[in-house]
Image (cartoon, rainbow over all chains, first blue to last red; front, top):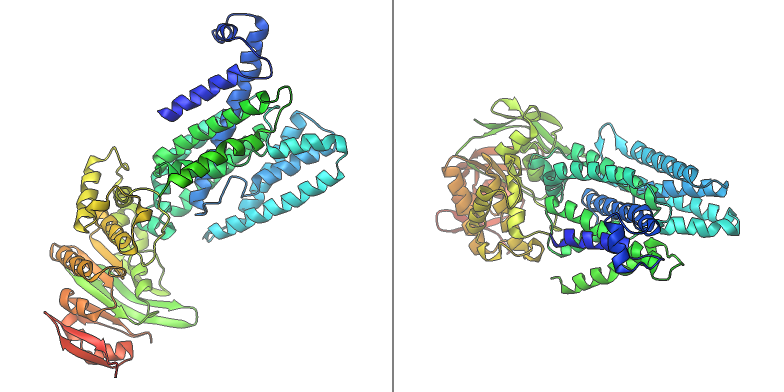
Length: 314
Length: 255
């Protein structure tokens, strides 16, 4: 309940603050669909799609992180560990290097993410079964390869393009105008994850124990991996690589006492979404008209929360 | 109704642990499995639970091979306490124990009052009631072992397979657990457990399986099998016998 209220409040903040200051009365009128056309356009045409995109990005990343931490049984797992975002980065930066922009960069990022995901599953899945260590190693390998390719592209790129590339790498929501795809992926991913929730609870105890409790381990792992990959790709398509959210939001919730996935997963969606909406509002209004990359601010907002909870937890 | 091992050979690379083993576990039986480290006790329990594949032979439940039973139905009939478990569980002891309800299709925590009542009963049976709402990860090793046993009790399988259930437990809780398991067998469940202390086997189990790590195993009534000669051959050391309450205690001869 508190998190739902926080999510709503963060969205309201995102609509209220930005590079243009809007008096409260005008803002309320615009919110209700009245007032000046320019104000209405700023609130509903510019800020609302971006706030919704920010929420979807945070929610998708937190959901993917929560799933991967169970699947890989590694508290340091985050959505980028599988190299999918690395593939997307190579695609996007490669397209920028060739002077492309807008939809072409998006398409190249999507192509790169899909190639990385195909390589990941191709190298790690065997007919004889599913091996977590192979997935993890293949993912780390692909991510490292993508990192090297990104470094090469950054070295080769003309100075004028590097700034845009760095923003993409650090996570940037300025180009996220159509969040619908992200939201559709989010709803589908959350629905699938909630169906899997009891099996994920058992998987925490290890694959052998989960099997002894009647869980179809290989099938659960395969579906959860696909959901986590799709969520990561959707988030990366909206905002590039926004770090920290996928790694830390699930831990924040576990430290706050939520461990059953039936509760943890929807709460991760709310908390991740709220965190990125707040970070993005700060990113575009703190030093307006200058805009910070949202990825840098997610960590600035989240790290103190994590450290505080760590200090208070037993 | 039996869990039957038919011609089972268990092997690890380069070594046969047990060859062509035949035995059956019937409801009402309490069976102790004894052997040296690495003799194949855990491998046998995993095979009995349908979690490990023998090199040869097979395990059947009521005459049907385990692989042909639906996994969830099997989990309602067979439950196992593994020797090692994951330590990183973030929820409370009650939530941990409630996971045992999973094969019965019950929702977890909150919407399952019957499950919560069962879990509280199981937690009380292993003397953890004071810790029910405490985070699982804050428990001591012995308390975790009791919580894992409570989870198995909530799973309520017909066949309880336990790999070293007494590990980490103090003497009082060892006795309480052996009484609990023997009581479950008397009430019609079947219990098979890997043990390292022949006294508990002789005092509370009616059947024993000795696994020599040479591929040979000996199976029979506990009082026939658990003799000083057999145990000295099993553990490859001389033993001293001391009369205990209801069974003989064997110590390694330290002279």
